[in-house]
Image (cartoon, rainbow, N blue to C red; front, side, top):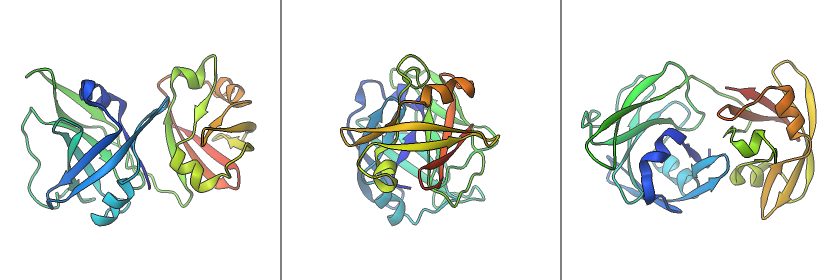
Length: 231
Protein backbone atom coordinates (compact mmCIF):
# COMPACT_ATOMS: atom_id res chain seq x y z
CA UNK A 1 0.00 0.00 0.00
CA UNK A 2 1.55 3.32 -1.07
CA UNK A 3 -0.97 5.76 0.39
CA UNK A 4 -3.24 6.07 3.41
CA UNK A 5 -6.56 7.86 3.39
CA UNK A 6 -7.27 10.26 6.26
CA UNK A 7 -10.88 9.71 7.44
CA UNK A 8 -13.12 12.68 6.51
CA UNK A 9 -14.40 12.90 10.11
CA UNK A 10 -10.81 13.58 11.19
CA UNK A 11 -10.02 16.22 8.57
CA UNK A 12 -12.27 18.81 10.22
CA UNK A 13 -10.07 18.73 13.33
CA UNK A 14 -7.03 19.89 11.34
CA UNK A 15 -8.75 23.27 11.01
CA UNK A 16 -6.51 25.67 9.05
CA UNK A 17 -3.37 23.61 9.63
CA UNK A 18 -3.69 21.34 6.62
CA UNK A 19 -0.85 21.62 4.10
CA UNK A 20 0.85 19.43 1.49
CA UNK A 21 3.44 18.05 3.95
CA UNK A 22 3.10 16.15 7.22
CA UNK A 23 5.49 14.57 9.73
CA UNK A 24 4.90 11.18 11.34
CA UNK A 25 6.55 10.07 14.58
CA UNK A 26 6.19 6.90 16.62
CA UNK A 27 7.44 5.42 19.89
CA UNK A 28 10.67 4.27 18.21
CA UNK A 29 11.68 7.94 18.04
CA UNK A 30 11.85 8.03 14.26
CA UNK A 31 10.52 10.83 12.05
CA UNK A 32 9.09 10.45 8.55
CA UNK A 33 8.10 13.21 6.14
CA UNK A 34 5.10 12.44 3.93
CA UNK A 35 3.24 14.38 1.28
CA UNK A 36 -0.46 15.11 1.69
CA UNK A 37 -2.53 14.69 -1.46
CA UNK A 38 -6.07 16.06 -1.78
CA UNK A 39 -8.61 15.27 -4.48
CA UNK A 40 -12.42 15.44 -4.61
CA UNK A 41 -12.59 11.97 -3.06
CA UNK A 42 -10.51 12.60 0.03
CA UNK A 43 -7.18 13.49 1.62
CA UNK A 44 -4.31 11.01 1.59
CA UNK A 45 -0.83 10.48 3.01
CA UNK A 46 1.11 9.64 -0.14
CA UNK A 47 4.87 9.89 -0.84
CA UNK A 48 6.73 8.69 2.26
CA UNK A 49 3.90 6.48 3.55
CA UNK A 50 5.40 3.37 1.94
CA UNK A 51 8.74 4.05 3.65
CA UNK A 52 6.98 4.54 7.00
CA UNK A 53 5.27 1.15 6.61
CA UNK A 54 8.48 -0.62 5.60
CA UNK A 55 10.66 0.86 8.33
CA UNK A 56 8.06 -0.01 10.98
CA UNK A 57 7.55 -3.55 9.64
CA UNK A 58 3.86 -2.97 8.98
CA UNK A 59 1.94 -5.64 7.11
CA UNK A 60 -1.74 -6.42 6.65
CA UNK A 61 -2.94 -6.82 10.22
CA UNK A 62 -1.67 -3.96 12.37
CA UNK A 63 -4.00 -1.24 13.61
CA UNK A 64 -2.76 2.33 13.82
CA UNK A 65 -3.94 5.22 16.00
CA UNK A 66 -2.96 8.73 14.93
CA UNK A 67 -2.67 11.55 17.47
CA UNK A 68 -2.57 15.03 16.00
CA UNK A 69 0.01 17.25 17.71
CA UNK A 70 -0.57 20.36 15.60
CA UNK A 71 1.38 21.87 12.69
CA UNK A 72 0.75 18.74 10.55
CA UNK A 73 2.61 16.48 13.01
CA UNK A 74 1.09 13.09 13.82
CA UNK A 75 2.23 10.62 16.47
CA UNK A 76 1.41 7.07 15.39
CA UNK A 77 0.71 4.27 17.85
CA UNK A 78 1.00 0.74 16.46
CA UNK A 79 -1.18 -2.12 17.71
CA UNK A 80 -0.81 -5.77 16.76
CA UNK A 81 -3.70 -7.89 15.45
CA UNK A 82 -4.51 -9.04 18.99
CA UNK A 83 -4.89 -5.43 20.13
CA UNK A 84 -1.57 -5.27 22.01
CA UNK A 85 0.39 -2.05 21.56
CA UNK A 86 3.97 -2.53 20.46
CA UNK A 87 5.35 -0.39 23.28
CA UNK A 88 3.67 1.88 25.86
CA UNK A 89 -0.08 1.59 26.56
CA UNK A 90 -2.48 3.95 24.78
CA UNK A 91 -3.01 7.33 26.41
CA UNK A 92 -6.40 8.29 27.82
CA UNK A 93 -5.64 12.01 27.61
CA UNK A 94 -8.83 13.57 26.21
CA UNK A 95 -6.90 16.47 24.69
CA UNK A 96 -5.17 14.13 22.26
CA UNK A 97 -6.67 14.07 18.81
CA UNK A 98 -6.80 10.47 17.68
CA UNK A 99 -8.46 8.34 15.07
CA UNK A 100 -8.26 4.69 14.14
CA UNK A 101 -6.94 3.82 10.70
CA UNK A 102 -5.72 0.48 9.42
CA UNK A 103 -2.46 -0.22 7.63
CA UNK A 104 -1.90 -2.28 4.52
CA UNK A 105 -5.18 -3.97 3.63
CA UNK A 106 -7.73 -1.93 5.49
CA UNK A 107 -9.15 -3.53 8.58
CA UNK A 108 -12.91 -2.97 9.04
CA UNK A 109 -15.66 -4.39 11.32
CA UNK A 110 -17.06 -3.70 14.79
CA UNK A 111 -17.22 0.04 15.45
CA UNK A 112 -14.74 1.22 18.09
CA UNK A 113 -14.57 4.71 19.59
CA UNK A 114 -11.47 6.82 20.07
CA UNK A 115 -11.10 10.12 21.93
CA UNK A 116 -10.94 13.22 19.79
CA UNK A 117 -9.84 16.56 21.26
CA UNK A 118 -10.94 19.85 19.79
CA UNK A 119 -8.18 22.08 18.44
CA UNK A 120 -10.34 25.07 19.28
CA UNK A 121 -10.65 24.44 23.03
CA UNK A 122 -11.14 21.86 25.77
CA UNK A 123 -14.46 20.52 24.45
CA UNK A 124 -14.44 16.78 23.86
CA UNK A 125 -16.11 14.76 21.14
CA UNK A 126 -15.97 11.18 19.96
CA UNK A 127 -15.76 9.64 16.53
CA UNK A 128 -16.52 6.10 15.42
CA UNK A 129 -14.26 4.48 12.85
CA UNK A 130 -15.77 1.28 11.52
CA UNK A 131 -13.37 -1.55 10.82
CA UNK A 132 -13.86 -4.96 9.33
CA UNK A 133 -11.30 -7.48 8.11
CA UNK A 134 -10.61 -7.33 4.40
CA UNK A 135 -7.86 -8.94 2.39
CA UNK A 136 -7.49 -9.30 -1.35
CA UNK A 137 -4.95 -10.75 -3.73
CA UNK A 138 -5.86 -7.95 -6.14
CA UNK A 139 -4.72 -4.32 -5.99
CA UNK A 140 -7.51 -2.00 -4.87
CA UNK A 141 -8.37 1.51 -3.79
CA UNK A 142 -11.28 3.07 -1.93
CA UNK A 143 -13.12 6.32 -2.65
CA UNK A 144 -15.68 8.32 -0.75
CA UNK A 145 -18.47 9.40 -3.07
CA UNK A 146 -18.57 13.19 -3.15
CA UNK A 147 -21.11 15.41 -4.91
CA UNK A 148 -18.95 15.60 -8.05
CA UNK A 149 -18.80 11.80 -8.17
CA UNK A 150 -22.53 11.15 -8.05
CA UNK A 151 -24.18 14.34 -9.34
CA UNK A 152 -23.95 16.60 -12.40
CA UNK A 153 -20.31 16.17 -13.50
CA UNK A 154 -20.17 12.46 -12.59
CA UNK A 155 -16.38 12.33 -12.38
CA UNK A 156 -14.36 10.06 -10.10
CA UNK A 157 -10.62 10.69 -9.83
CA UNK A 158 -8.55 7.56 -9.24
CA UNK A 159 -5.73 7.87 -6.67
CA UNK A 160 -2.59 8.81 -8.57
CA UNK A 161 -0.36 6.17 -7.01
CA UNK A 162 -2.84 3.44 -8.03
CA UNK A 163 -3.33 4.61 -11.60
CA UNK A 164 0.41 5.12 -12.14
CA UNK A 165 1.02 1.52 -11.08
CA UNK A 166 -1.74 -0.15 -13.07
CA UNK A 167 -2.82 2.04 -16.01
CA UNK A 168 -0.87 3.47 -18.97
CA UNK A 169 -0.51 7.27 -19.17
CA UNK A 170 -3.33 7.54 -21.69
CA UNK A 171 -7.09 7.41 -22.08
CA UNK A 172 -8.56 3.91 -21.87
CA UNK A 173 -11.80 2.02 -21.31
CA UNK A 174 -12.39 0.03 -18.15
CA UNK A 175 -15.13 -2.38 -17.14
CA UNK A 176 -16.84 -1.99 -13.77
CA UNK A 177 -18.59 -5.03 -12.29
CA UNK A 178 -20.99 -4.95 -9.34
CA UNK A 179 -21.65 -7.64 -6.75
CA UNK A 180 -24.42 -9.13 -8.91
CA UNK A 181 -21.99 -9.64 -11.78
CA UNK A 182 -23.47 -6.96 -14.07
CA UNK A 183 -20.90 -4.95 -16.00
CA UNK A 184 -20.60 -1.40 -17.35
CA UNK A 185 -18.01 -0.04 -19.78
CA UNK A 186 -16.66 3.31 -18.61
CA UNK A 187 -14.29 5.82 -20.18
CA UNK A 188 -11.19 6.48 -18.10
CA UNK A 189 -9.78 9.84 -19.15
CA UNK A 190 -6.19 10.95 -18.56
CA UNK A 191 -5.43 14.59 -17.76
CA UNK A 192 -2.69 16.32 -15.75
CA UNK A 193 -1.12 12.94 -14.98
CA UNK A 194 -4.33 11.67 -13.39
CA UNK A 195 -6.95 9.13 -14.46
CA UNK A 196 -10.66 9.74 -13.87
CA UNK A 197 -13.78 7.68 -14.55
CA UNK A 198 -15.99 9.77 -16.82
CA UNK A 199 -18.29 8.67 -19.66
CA UNK A 200 -20.44 5.77 -18.48
CA UNK A 201 -19.65 6.40 -14.82
CA UNK A 202 -22.89 8.34 -14.37
CA UNK A 203 -24.88 5.36 -15.64
CA UNK A 204 -23.07 3.09 -13.19
CA UNK A 205 -23.85 5.53 -10.36
CA UNK A 206 -27.56 5.72 -11.17
CA UNK A 207 -28.08 2.01 -11.78
CA UNK A 208 -26.31 1.11 -8.54
CA UNK A 209 -28.06 3.84 -6.52
CA UNK A 210 -24.80 5.39 -5.34
CA UNK A 211 -25.14 8.56 -3.32
CA UNK A 212 -22.97 11.17 -1.66
CA UNK A 213 -21.29 9.71 1.43
CA UNK A 214 -21.08 6.14 0.14
CA UNK A 215 -17.67 4.50 0.07
CA UNK A 216 -16.71 2.19 -2.79
CA UNK A 217 -13.83 -0.24 -3.07
CA UNK A 218 -12.46 -0.85 -6.57
CA UNK A 219 -10.51 -4.12 -7.06
CA UNK A 220 -8.53 -4.57 -10.26
CA UNK A 221 -9.42 -8.25 -10.80
CA UNK A 222 -8.32 -8.40 -14.44
CA UNK A 223 -6.64 -6.06 -16.88
CA UNK A 224 -8.90 -2.98 -17.02
CA UNK A 225 -11.67 -4.80 -15.12
CA UNK A 226 -12.61 -3.60 -11.64
CA UNK A 227 -14.93 -5.27 -9.17
CA UNK A 228 -16.81 -2.56 -7.25
CA UNK A 229 -17.95 -3.07 -3.66
CA UNK A 230 -20.23 -0.55 -1.96
CA UNK A 231 -19.18 -0.51 1.70
